[in-house]
Amino acid sequence: MSVGVLLMTHEAVGKALISAAHHVMPELPLPVTAVEIPPQADPDVMRTLTARHARQLDTGDGVLVLADLYGATPCNIGLSLGELGVHLHCVSGLNLPMLLRVLNYADKPLDELAEIAASGGRGGILIDHA
Image (tube, rainbow, N blue to C red):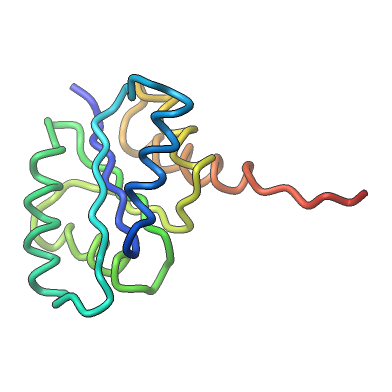
């Protein structure tokens, strides 16, 4: 078994990140899917759809939800999945380094993967002081 990874993003972000991850790793070691929230989407409808995706990803080890922006609708829907009985951790601030770091530690349990995701996201940020 393994942790499932659910990207909760605004429109066109999640699938682009999965495509970029496939460029780096042609075979992703964890199941990854994206739910992209269109601008005029009904949050309740999207929550139901997202819960279905999350349950499909959960093979017993839980789901790591990676959301693009804390406080925005995709993240809020991801956070609400726990109330629907989905075993998950949600990490916001999604970027490609975060996703790649998670995929490089595919054997880790959910709690540890959440920490790895946050660390990978922060570690992928660099300010050029030249």
